[in-house]
Image (cartoon, rainbow, N blue to C red; front, side, top):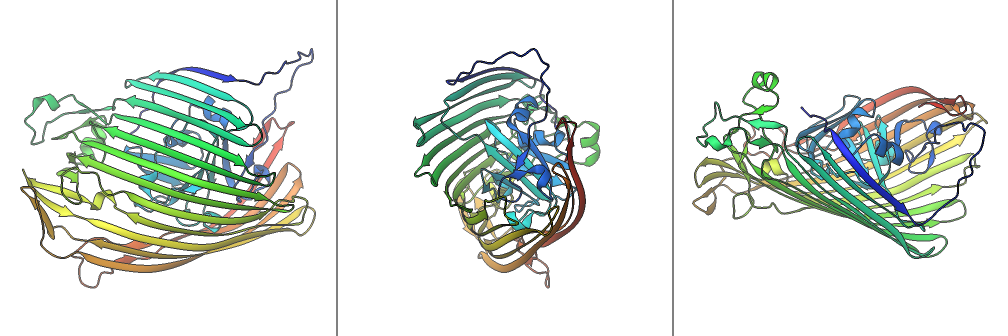
Length: 531
């Protein structure tokens, strides 16, 4: 259950550019701004794209008070974001397609960087340029885990205009949110810098009741559960090397901390959860800390009729947790200490892309290569289960994964009003897990003992993701389309020891085939859009 915060906001914005507005006697007609999206990896009008896209502009993000990805649930049709106690452990669902796994069913991109793992979610939203939600499978261009769709988030980059903002917010559940940002040219028309960040703290909306638990500490009664503090920063450095070539470096970092953690908490049975959804029965109140850093370098070269793009990224995520009542008490563990920070998950990715830019040509195209390498320590399989004081059963899991893909999409205007599109992607993945089962390792009186040796299992997968579309333009602002798209979610290795004989340790990818017919239009002098 998620309760919406009641928020009071004080905002201050400034810019060094000024303009004088001329007042006219005639009534000014209000029209909707033209919506530009990158659903096909290049900028196009939403109305011209044969994909169901909800695009939210910077103004709408501010007016709608979208401060977390979970807020999109009330703004985007067919979309659901379900926090599992904390914002970085959540289920995203589009058109009912969802799964709880380190490999999600909905892909999330921030500034063109794919957040491969569910643990990478929950970034704060501040100084956002626009958000696009693509509904239906998008694996042809966006790759693995876009089986249900894609959430595409773009933050504002610095330009020649010096701007800044400060926001102070307060709301229920003791919410306090402070955010600020500043962007400026360091060298006009050449080098630009931007930075923004926020600090947020709030109480949880659940109250603890030790009734029915083994707890004897009466001070736990009435304690808030689910509160958290978040610190976020985002910095850009953009360099226009030449008129045709640019480089943009970006670093995002976030810390999420709580000593009244809602991470992994659960009720003893469904009846209690439904009857008293804001009351939790915990014998201990846990803590958690997640740190994530996301670095990227984007290079763009603009030729006469095409663009070349390179996106290099490195992501690091670390997590610790302690006294998590699931029920049963769990702590993060890997080497030597209960509640220690797990080794960081690290992801390297690289994408090269070429796309046409001459919109007058009948033939339009986009093609590219993508690769990644990932070392992971999944939190639910790197933990200590507490049997008794100073006596723990240990479960550990280290994964080594890599993937490579080639993709492309071509559209051709057969007639003045008829356009056909065809695309395909081929992915290859290698996955490996080294793990032990429950009972294979223990931590007793501060001493780690390996009872049975770790197991290593590996698997290879491939996936073909085709796409076909037909679009007919009745007018410039009225298009009908029919599409077929296929999405896939990556397979993997079941990192559990002691499976029954004959049960495969690996599992295959999942696929989703989507057939869609749609109509998009804008009318009444662009006052109404149906997209």
